[in-house]
Image (cartoon, rainbow, N blue to C red; front, side):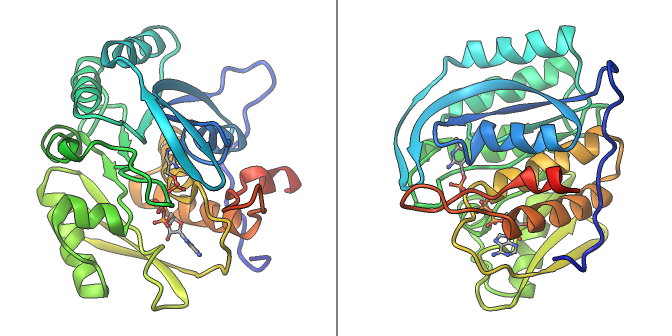
Length: 285
Ligand SMILES: Nc1ncnc2c1ncn2[C@@H]1O[C@H](COP(=O)(O)OP(=O)(O)O)[C@@H](O)[C@H]1O
Ligand SMILES: Cc1ncc(COP(=O)(O)O)c(N)n1
């Protein structure tokens, strides 16, 4: 990793209002994924992070033992409260728990001018389960994800399990990865990132980005660690930060791949299970 050039987003000046972004996601009591991962990355990227909490999970390094979803109207009101006063330059979604919350978030994003083809880009990380396989999204919410949220996405960032659930495509190689990206774009996302994080057959971790026209491939060295809790959230949060700072989508994904790679390189053990990726590497630069 030491040989990789460090790509940083600009730090805010003292007493200047920083760039703002919002995460609409679940809380992880273990502090490694969800809102906590998003806020860590946003802070380390010089972004003031605002939140709309969708669910409170009971979670540690061993998994998720339960969660309580927030009233969809309260999720919508958090979004309205932030946008009407503080203002944001980009937003992301993570765990949305239910179809009622997905519908509320999509409708409120339309009302507030958030999403593709608006000035406020929306990164949709379609979280469906934790890395331990614990469900974070109701089974009957997949239709709402496909029909109301993905069509609002500036960028959608599924991992391979989520790709299978959303598109029915089992990504095993370059050809199926391309087919999945095409299908996600056809569902209405402006850009689709099909993450190759769990394609174990290669020494590279190759993410593929597609906008209906051009494929961009982001090959990065695979990092050998079991401490990868929050990697997906961190990638999506870093894309959101770069978009909030005015980068284009391909530039934002390039930035985020470098960011998450360093976070994986610096990941630490925590508890008896999987430790979190670690954006605090930024403090050493
Ligand atoms: N071991 C690894 N080495 C390098 N990059 C990885 C590794 N695991 C995941 N990534 C990258 O981290 C990001 C999140 O990956 P992924 O595992 O798909 O996330 P999640 O399952 O948490 O949603 C992607 O850019 C992926 O390519
Ligand atoms: C609240 C919340 N949001 C997202 C994830 C996914 O992260 P991971 O795939 O690393 O378990 C999670 N475990 N908890």
